[in-house]
Length: 124
Image (cartoon, rainbow, N blue to C red):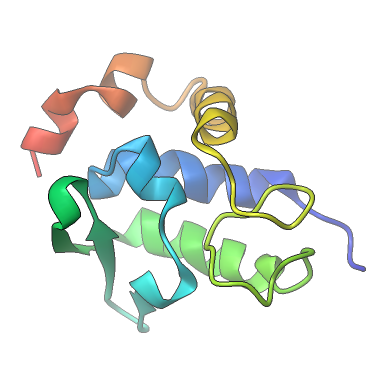
């Protein structure tokens, strides 16, 4: 198995709520099939509250983070599964694990209020 680079998954995990306006539960609920990337564009299919689904454009910094994570994800345990974000054991990342990881990864990038607040969601 290749050496893991947690920074890559942490970047993708931290930038998803910030650039896509997703809640933590929506972020960890993402599957590989929910991410559509091309050379210049990308979109994210987000399954939200009330069984609603929305399409969100993927901004260039998030597209770069997803590209890096998806290339490394193939070497993780559980990579054959549908979950986009995996924990070290190869299972879908939990909301608690994502919350902790995202706060740690976001240190210095944005404030917690900017990352998780509804203000960011409403600005998209």
